[in-house]
Image (cartoon, rainbow, N blue to C red):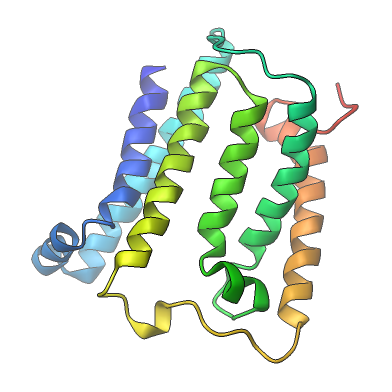
Length: 198
């Protein structure tokens, strides 16, 4: 559990630090843009690796139950993650109607993904993991609303005339959701997520 918590503190803490615009600007001024990005990337990778490894150790050593989710929450989680994948697929640099409507589809995707896993998992490690990601995504969205130093180029762009990018995001998200949920989730995570498996 300690490694999982350390990983979450490093990974989410690094991402949360970007909300502190003054201290962030101070580090960039001290180490330069490239130096800041290098340190940010290194800490993020280290934190993510420790989070994944720590969660695997936690599961292997026996999970700590907090509550027992009903079976239907697992089916709902599978459906919710479809919308998470579609939202993440719409988070590219090219604008779409989805992006224009939700403003920050990557953060929305993380919030949906984390919520889906929270309702389907009632153990302490999962609550810390997915609850941590949900708290970060909510805080990051609030921070973006209040931010005044972001370049115009990075702000959500207006919707384009056509729907090609939306269709691509929906189809791409659907395919990745199906392949990951049915085949890769059991292989990489060790959990059968798809109804009827295992």
